[in-house]
Image 1: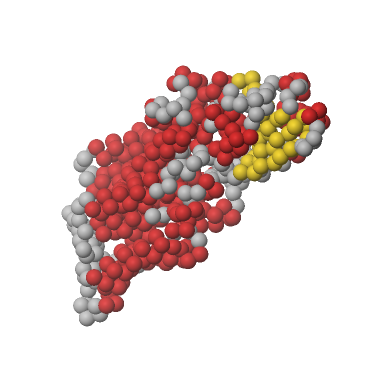
Image 2: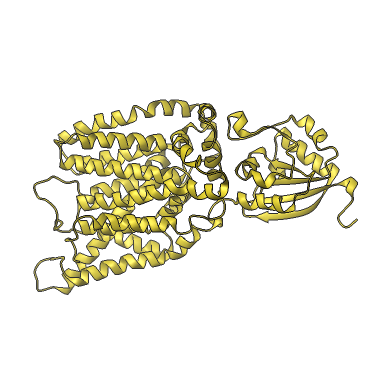
Length: 513
């Protein structure tokens, strides 16, 4: 194998296989964290109930829930459901890895495509979202396919099918997450800086417009549901630093990645397998805008209205993968230049270049292994609902009651209902599914004390980072008042993200009596 001459399917297939293997490695963590539990419970609702829910809340994830619905209908509970829930993300990451390789192969060389695809497939943050039961890996795959369609459309200006595919990919990506629209900003800059020509720009505009038409109703509906992101705050420079380390790693890995990005901008020669007759977008003109502009745009918009979450622009990592792939290829060419000073040219066909490029790629993969292991642990997510449910299942007695502080913590029971079979939910009036919402409904605060009368033991479940003093709704204050006045705490158990307390009625006496 030699630099620049790796042709055909291996350059695309190998990264896809690596991404698939990485996606299935540890995919069964043993718990769905809060957001995944939301995906699991909402997507399993009947189609009429799901449609009613999306009219009230979470419309931005509507397409994703509809895609999950038939898949989750194949499983009956959370144990197999946890894995099935993540399958679309695993497969989407496989597709994205192949697409990253294909874009780099088309715009640079097959060898660069292989390196970029493998760089993407072995990035820890990619593995993180490959095993996440949310839409972000699918959004990334859609953006990759849109970019590939754009690159092919520029190279084959007379074939309109690439513009049709581009518009379709844009539509799917933005329907899965409206912030995929910032990828269009990157594509616009790519076309401008690469001087793709007036024809490409003229065709790009209507392709974008056609892709965004189906998204307009979603934007209108979701604009009425902005309370869902009301907890977000205006991001500062700290958020920028966190995003860089999230995508590129920390410590030595960050230094190596930064070095490869710098190498990517070294002057190089045309790819050995490039066709001089066909116009091509330069890889750097594709990669740099994608890596920088979507995060920058979301950060800028969030100074006016806070929307920023790094997962909303996860797809920017594809730009970084292209830069790293180009840097690895440049390192190989530079090695050849240094080892063949008498040749007078950068042949790119000698073994030392291949060895150095592969060694650097292997080094980044090895440096990333601790992070790869971390993202497969339950503690890599915000909480462990399965662990909280297990405490109830193992400790509950007939006649026990359970309270959630606040009611939103009832997602634990929504996701793992069998573990709550022995306890009564004395404050519940309608589940989230019955209410067509994400949060269940409870009885009025003035009825809480009566609902707890004659209940000997009460389990209270709340997030570990939320103190009692921060619970301020009338229902939560009534729950805390009843627990304080009529019960004493008999035990306190912590699992990741939750604290579960057992309260025993004062009439039963303290433990041991």
